[in-house]
Length: 271
Image (cartoon, rainbow, N blue to C red):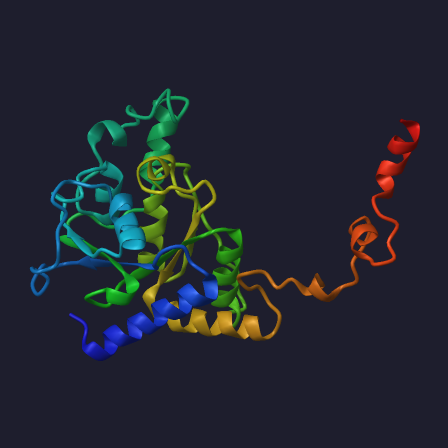
């Protein structure tokens, strides 16, 4: 469990990211647990939910949940991604998605087996919590937002790296790319939410996910501030043209000596 000082640090980080990125909701912390010792008092869902639903609980409702395979049984994807259960045989063999998401079983089998996952049996449970009240040091933190917000996060992470970021998607099981790669590689992941997440957990047609390893939080925040002070990507966008001279056709109306809506004159003369 975190100390009071560390809890205050997490809250400060969460508040800073929310302020600089104008986030809708809270950054979501995820911690994989190899043991439940010391975490027995953390709330558990009273019915099986999908991982994406638990993430939205933290993001929108500011709720912390601990879930084992029993509490996270609402979707095979979240269970398989976190290593809390095996992928169901019919999914693994390509049968469930064939003729629907994929052309045939062979295609489906290749896609499903290529999904990034944590090893089965390593972890006993997962904590999904708003970052500011996370009861332990998280492995990764998820940020939801539009393209402008994703750009600021990516640029903030890269401002002192001298490298680029690459991402993958399979068009389904978006949580796979939000959880497994950042934990395994220590690098962030940009995620397109899957259709399942959009249907049951994400009331947005534009949100993407930026999944950031916890040990990169402070440095990325420094990068965001660095960019902001130097005219780099910010949220909201820096509208430099606010002080530019007003251009036609708006200036025809706003200029005290303007001619008015000249585009209407031919119509008026004709009538």
